[in-house]
Each structure stands twice: as C-alpha cells, then as structure tokens.
Length: 323
Ligand code: UDP
Ligand code: MG
Image (cartoon, rainbow, N blue to C red; front, side, top):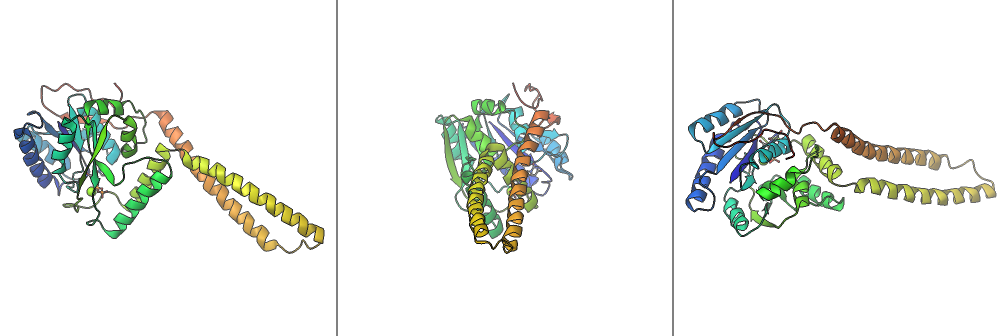
C-alpha cells in the first residue's frame, strides 16, 4: 500500500503528519492489513520553504518515507496525479490524503477493510463541516450543488481523500487530459466503489493553500473540464431570447400601427444592454471551452519529476502518463 501526500509549503505540519502516518502504518502492518513494504510518498509540489529538505531527511532516517520532487509548482491536482501515476507501477492500492491532517487518518482502517472485501475505489466523505469556517462551508457546499446541477457528477462532500486499487489507478492513467479535476474523473473510471465517513478537522498548522481565487478557478475547472452543459444552456438561452424578441417585434408593430413610435427609447437602450451582456457572457463561456481545447491540444506534460527518493528494489519509470 502507498500513501500519497501532495505537499506545498507544508514545513509546519510535516513533522506531525509524518509522525502520525508512521504510527498508523505500523499499526496497519502489524494487523496484517497492508504489506510490510508499504510506503508513504510525499510529493513536493515546488515548495518555497524547507518542505523538500524535510522529506529528504525523513527518507534518509526511515525507508517508510519516500519523496517525489516536482520540477516546479503545478497545483494540488497535478501533484496528486504525479504521485499516483508513479506509485501505480509498484503498489496494490494507494490512498491519497492532504498533508495538513484535515482528513482523519483513522478512516484508513475502514477504507482498507472495504478494499480487502473487493471494493476498488473508496471515497472519504466528510460527515459534517462543523469545524470549517462559515465561508468555507458555504462556498464548498454551493460548489458541490452547482457542480451536480451543471452535470459534473461528483461524490458529495468528498475531497481527495480516497483509496484506489491498482486497476482503478491503471484506469485513471488512461485519462490523458491536462485539465485535471480528479474528483470528477475518478467516478468515471468505474469499478465498484464505496464511501467511508469521517469528521474533517481543522488544518493542523500553516495556512490554506486555496484562497478564494484558486477556489473559484478550481470550480470553473471542475465544471468546464467535466461537462458541456453550460454550452447547451447558452443555446437554450439563445432560443428563449429569440422568442422574446418575436413578441417584442409584434408589440412594436402594433404600436407602429397606432402611430406612436417615438417613445420607447428606454426599452430600446435597456434591451441593447441586456442582450449585449448576455452575448458577452455566452462568448466568455464558449471562450473558456476553446481555451481548454487549446491547452489539451498542446498535450503538455501534467508534471515533470525532478527526482524520486525510493527503495532500491522498486523499478519505476518517471513518465507523465499513459502506459
Ligand atoms: N497543495 C499542493 N499544491 C498547491 C496547493 C496545495 O500540493 O499548489 C497541497 C497542500 O500541501 C495540501 C493539499 O494540497 O496537502 C490541500 O491544500 P490545502 O489544505 O491548503 O487546501 P484546503 O484544505 O484549504 O482546501
Ligand atoms: Mg487543507
């Protein structure tokens, strides 16, 4: 079993995270639930602080810990896929988790139990958001609701804390897209899945790496990379406005027939603005998709691994994606 932890500027939490992970891994190994050569892999996502040095230190002191160093900061999702696609070659299953200890490490036991009874993907789901700030709770919940309304199927209140079997990871590796939204992609892999509930804690230390700007980017990413429903909604809106304009046309003709056409400046100007706005919104959304096509067509690598601190026996190819 491999535990994959993306880390970006996490020097404040790493000592505690590694301590708790070590205890958890030792317990799981002694219970015979996971193989004795199970490992924890920290993926350093171009941190600017001492994160990578700490990971290297952990690896030197204890082979339980491994480290993958990305060539630069690529964001949470890319760091996660870098880790998963690397360990997929040497593991039977992998659990992904954040570095900040917000995900309850004890939920792993239940995840592994489910895996051992034949489930390929186990999603960790937050049972409550009592510990989140009101703002975070509100934005996150609206986000899930909007996502589902717009046709991107995600597991409600599930972040990136999940267990995936090797064959599920192999399935995921066949998704070649560059715009990543793993929460939406993993359900598309299929196979049997289940959920495990846990209480989400506060960040152990350090600051959230997801300010509002990044959160909005992530939400847009999620919707436009999984669904084309917004485009269809624009078409629907277009039809609706066309219908309205026919009614307005009839109204205008009737007014004309009655001979009083000079009035109506207000309505004219208002509608010009309204339609102008709608056209711009529509173009913006379409532009979003075209931008996606542009980026996907480049086929840029999703990550570049600078180095991998691993066991000597493990042979892995540090490739971006695909077979
Ligand atoms: N993270 C990353 N690269 C980034 C931003 C975040 O690898 O560019 C990692 C971060 O170290 C953490 C996880 O992604 O392990 C989730 O980030 P964070 O806890 O800041 O997000 P939040 O829980 O506030 O949504
Ligand atoms: Mg967090």
